[in-house]
Length: 280
Image 1 (cartoon, rainbow, N blue to C red):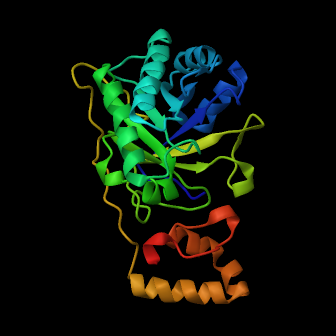
Image 2 (image 1 turned 45 degrees about the vertical axis):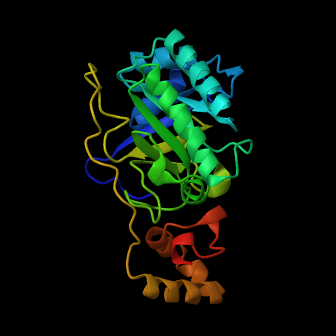
């Protein structure tokens, strides 16, 4: 993980898989997080019973606290029901509708494999939350989902949060629009961060959407920067040629792994297996 650029802030996301102790939450603050996103619900039945304690400690220690829902929906009706379930729980926890970021976590195998259908279901979820008064809604998913499973250009979210472990994107990961990047999670990807001995999801907030305090009021405050359009970093033909050379030479592949990752933004499971979709 490289040095953060000026203006980039850090935040974490946690769930019942992480402890609700004062020492752990203090560790998150000491690590440099300005905000924490906590899991509150999943599908239409699961409530994270640790959320209340986590929220209280996070806010007591002066960090912003937001909420995420692990979605399972496979239809518009299910998307509306899950949005209502998420909303109800967050209201009970005392989240502010003008200030809280409500995150739709899109990665479940139960979801539709149709790109158009899943895009519609995500919008149904987002629109229902907004109808219920929540003013700041984000969509979280992996880079591959944003390019192949949903039509990102049609999503109604206010922001995008992209997971890509091992890669080093800066605002315009090839083919994906985002303003928040989850760069570390499961140790199998080689980018694990341990806080007080606990593996913790770590993120960079490029535009202050998660880490800047909001004044609230009608409409809340808008993100400080627009979500950038994705761009291929460099001449596509030259990068294609380079990628072919790397794939054909095992020694070259290993010796240039870090450089290739930073430029191409593509390193699945700590090895280069194939070309990223935007070079095909």
